[in-house]
Structures are given as structure tokens and as C-alpha cells.
Amino acid sequence: MITEIGTVFHDKLEGREVTIRGWVYRHRTSGNMVFAVIRDPTGLIQATVKKDRVSEKDWKDANDAYVESSLTVTGVVKKDERAPGGYEIQATGFSLVSRGEPFPISKDLSDEFLLDIRHLWVRSRKMTAIMKARHHIVNYLREFFDREHFYEIAPPIITKSGCEGGSTLFEMDYFGDTAYLTQSSQMYAEVFIFSLGRVFVFAPSFRAEKSRTIRHLAEYWHLEPEMAYYDHEMNLKLQEDMCQYVIENMLKNHSGLLEACGRDPLDLEKVKTPFPRMEYKDAVDRVNELGGKMEHGEDFGADEEALLTKELDRPLFVHKYPKGIKAFYMKEDPKNPDLVLNDDLLAPRGHGEIIGGSERIWDYDELVSRMKEQNLNLSDYQWYIDLRKYGSVPHSGYGLGIERFVKWILNLDHIRDTIPFPRTITRCYP
Ligand code: ATP
Ligand code: MG
Image (cartoon, rainbow, N blue to C red):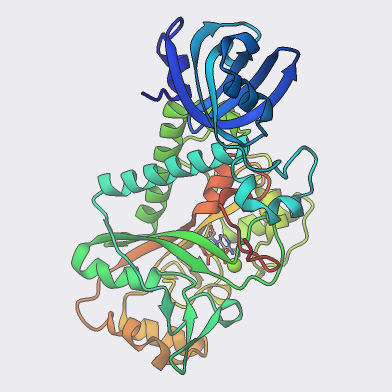
């Protein structure tokens, strides 16, 4: 029977013989002893191999092992203060499954090199912790929407028109015609509020982002809820509740993992709803007060968002932007026809935008006239306009970038480590 390393620490296995299956994490020889730290998906443990306690073949295997050689170790669990984690395995058997070759990663390698050998670097402690944390974050998101009675919809990835604007579309040949990789599934999600009420899409979005930033990827995972009969206020509340649900559960069930990723759980505990709100015009003034330089009518860039959120311990809603700088489907603010009922949710400590949302235009004439104002080609969006002809209802929705969310929750410096194989302007290998 194989024992997982994690259970050696949890269950009282001291004095018992176990067999573990893993990879060499660290390796050192000293006279008639070999010290090998072994890792498996559940943890690390040190194995000590003494020459006179194992067979000749096993002694050779123990000496020959490289970092990342795969192996099976059998031995007795002993308490040992000096060993990492307080326990070690005194080996009675040590057998390489595959010795392999010397591992190409050692300390102090450049970021670029680590990205070139991403397929190996993802085995590192940090990347392993991040991938586990991402898994839990995504699970809690799904769980949240399931509890709120949302249905998940599978959207198309190949589409005919963009929703974000032409400049960031990836174009492809579609049997002699032109098609694009989707930038957002929002419009397809809207289709389903008429039959399912509350829905969400969780799928990749593609954006040919021309600049190199610490928060843009060319391919990212996009969670897009869309809700019938939700107004602006309800939309914001849902965004808060969603963040709160994930954070509470991560803190309750995975605080060790948060720490392993470099996130201080105490700082995350300060994230409590309701989140503060600022109207766009006040946020622009605030940026200027804080030493930024920004005109009314401009959108916030990373620097401005960092200024707004650096000192905050919880996210900030910036809402009610000028109509002219926002997407055509956003509903006008009934109190001010120059503004729309949208919001960006900015994560604290300088992380910046994680969500963009809005109440949608649901009236046929209003949508068509806005599209004309913005010089859009109506025929490109005919099916979307059509939705307003047959039993239209008020509705709202938003888009959360999963990698931005993970970056914030784990407090990472760069978005690239939140996804196994980041796609950027300079990289789509491995
Ligand atoms: P930004 O101004 O940062 O480029 P955006 O206004 O283009 O963002 P939206 O179109 O509103 O973003 O998309 C919704 C969400 O998708 C964003 O709030 C963000 O979390 C995420 N997102 C957008 N573009 C990217 C990207 N290139 N890489 C990763 N996540 C992204
Ligand atoms: Mg953008």
C-alpha cells in the first residue's frame, strides 16, 4: 500500500512502516548515509538511507538519484526535530522508478529561462501551491453560483464579432471566411437569461493585448455571470458576495496554502463587505489628489488604479462612467444621461481591476440608437439586437478575470504565475 506524504504528518504513523512514491526534492550524501527529501503531491518528507540497512542495489539507487528522479521509498516513520516537518523515514528500501537526467533548474535562474522550461518549473513548491490554490478558488466560485441557482452555459470560442473592440481580436481563417477567437462570452450568456434566468459562463477569452503588463494575458479565463431582473445595485451586491464567499472559504480551509503562496491571511481577513464605492468623477478627482494626472473622460490605467487602491484593505467599486468611454450595451443612468450604470471592481493593495460589469440596455430602440451613435455595424450584431424584440427584460452581468482574481487573493506580483502556460505578446511556447 502506498502512503501519501501528507498523511504521515496528519495520522499518527510514528514507528510504522510506510511506502511512499514520489520525486527527489533535495539530495545529499555523507559517508555511509544518503539524505533525500522526497516530495509527492501532498507534501515533503526526508528519507535517510543508511548503507547497512538496505540492499546493495537500493544503496546504489540512493546514491545515483538526481533531483527530480522518481522513486519509491519504504521505511519506518521516526520523529526527528532536525527533519523538515519533524518526521523522517528511515529507509529499508529505496528504489528508483526513473533516474532520468540531471534536472536543469537550480537556484538563481532568469524569469525568461524559467518560462522556457515552464513544463518543468511548474513542479516547484511555489507553482504547486499556486496551482492548488487556483483549483480551490475556481471550485468555490462554481459552488457559489450553484448555491445561488445559476446555470453554467458553454459558449462558442469561435465567433464573428468582437465585444471589446477590433484592435485586440485574434483573427482566423474559417473555411475561407474570417472569424475571431472570442473576447468575451457576455452576449451569449445574455441569450440564456430568457430561459434560465441566472447563468454564467466560465471559459477562455482571447485578447491580442499589444503591451506587456503584469496583468494582461493574451488568453485568460473569464467568468461571466448574467442575471435577469438584476439592476445595478443587485449586480454590485452579487460581486461582493462572490468575493466574500471565496475569501471566507479560502481562509477557513486553506490558510496554509495561502501562506505557501506568499499571502498573509491576516491581511485577507480585512476584506469584508460592503465594499466602498466611488463614482467615476470622484475617482478621477481622487487620483489627481493623490498625485496622479488624469483628465475627466479618460479611463484609468494601471498606475491610476494602483494609486486608488494602494492604501485600501478591501476592494473599491468605481461606477457610473461617462457613456463615451464605455461599451455600447451599457444602460444609461436614469439620473444622468451622460453616464452609464457600470462598475469596475478594483482589488486593494494596488492590484487593480478584477471585474467589469454593468446593467445592460434591454430596450430595442435604446440599443439601436446607442449602436448608431457609436458607429457600429448593426448587421454584425443582429442576433444580439434580436434578443430585445421578444420578451426583453431588465438584466445585468459582469466579467471576472480569474487570473486577476487569483493574483489578488494570493498577492502575487505578476499575472503569469496564476496560469500554467501564460500567453503573452512575446510567448506561446511551451
Ligand atoms: P483592462 O482595462 O485592465 O484591460 P478591460 O476593461 O479590458 O480591462 P473587461 O473587458 O471589462 O476588461 O473584461 C472583464 C475582466 O476580464 C477584467 O476586469 C479583467 O479581470 C479581465 N481581463 C480583461 N483583459 C484581460 C487580459 N488581457 N488578461 C487577463 N485578464 C483580463
Ligand atoms: Mg483591456
